[in-house]
Image 1 (cartoon, one colour):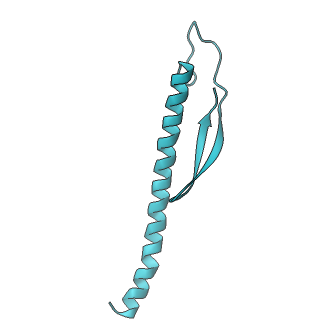
Image 2 (spheres, rainbow, N blue to C red):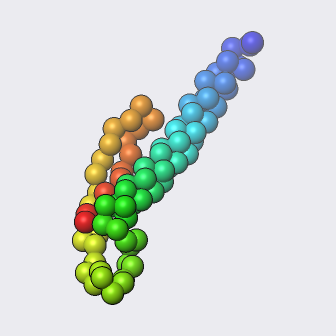
Image 3 (cartoon, one colour):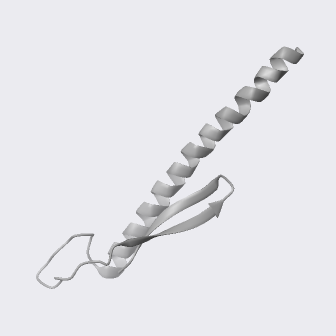
Length: 81
């Protein structure tokens, strides 16, 4: 590999790695948010915004929590119940 090719390679690899990390981070956020939401549904016994004769109250929304991963910081929406 010529020095010119090596220089170009060093410029391309970090850009692609950064983009891949961003995609992985987004996927991790979406997956963990869905798991947390499903767990809240299970604990409360009803889905978000669901009303029944036995259940008339609402869930208390969510709060943001940061989680540090090897791919970078992940922002989670933690449901309150």
